[in-house]
Image (tube, rainbow, N blue to C red; front, side):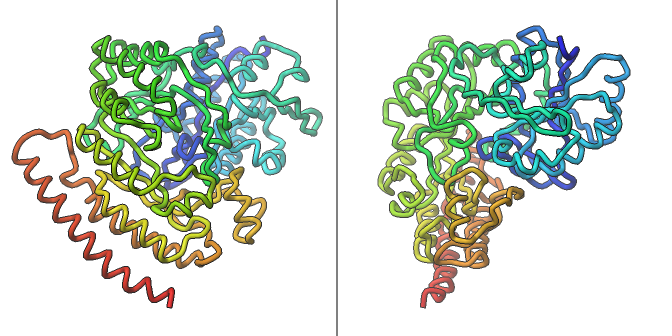
Length: 497
């Protein structure tokens, strides 16, 4: 073998932040210190794939292991002192790229014999920036599993698809490697390699400190919304695991690792409703005691599917509403969903005891003061359990970014951002500052009135006093949200005069 050991690495977060590199289709976001730690799914799959192939692996998941820069340098120096030839494979993201590259340089200076490669969904779109670094040895494009394995086991470098290598000061790029197709052929994530007990339920699934692990039952999204990084990082073609394979992994998590809550990380979990029902029926048949939530579209659900999901332990569904206006959805390549469809689906979820979390985007192409206010009001009217408002964000590689460049709203080579919770651009009708003001208004309603900062939001509490208090709080906060919205609406409508 060319390398004795692979260091599968998630580098420390930038100072003052917690990096969630799995967020936004793997392009990543930064959150304030103290935010929930979340594992990077493709990093777990990479480590598991290599171990399954007999490759010695050291996992350096710096967030869960609480390794800051000095501790990481010490750990790598100690590993290098054994005399083993080491390949460090670093998972990067859009908002952490510059910090990751700087740390790679520091590692190389401390351990010159260390070979370093970098990968992540954003990598193909920032090659110009990455190739400025002469401290890296390799760039992996696409799914990294097979590419890294072939490199480690000594395949001829010029023949390894998906590999870009530094040779005599010049970057040489091989032919590209397609996305993995046989997802059933992948080994189950070997969570025991990771500090998996550190990964907890997000606040929007209030249950105290409960270990929560993600699962991925499919990859790719054929809908192709212009603002979404999922089709960029995973492709448009939908690849899925069989129901048997999915529930086999779920059973392993429950019975071998003691996991009681799972977050399905598919772009659209119920894209094939019949497959979803088969998964649920198998969970029920095996009598697995597990709770879970997923993300999907309301037009990929029907009463039979939702009933099966509820019976199989589904406790929450994330819905991307984005805009209440069909025309705004159409503007960004989204297969439109009407308000009536959302109302029906959320009502059915409520009747089945499934909590709903609805996402909305402010400032999409075509948005005006009027359309944004209608969307905010819709968020109040449909009364989901949780909401989240974000700004239209031109993630690199998306069609929304192409539109923003054509409108002169963003620079061609700009790639770094913190997260989508702050306005990044304006649109053809509103300035960036106007969108920021509307977003702040929406987020005030989100945090303090709709979500109530999690106060009296635990829908799993069954004692009578708590349920009564929660019902009262739900009614009062909804009425308060309507009053505050009406006051704000009058102020914003003046912009249109």
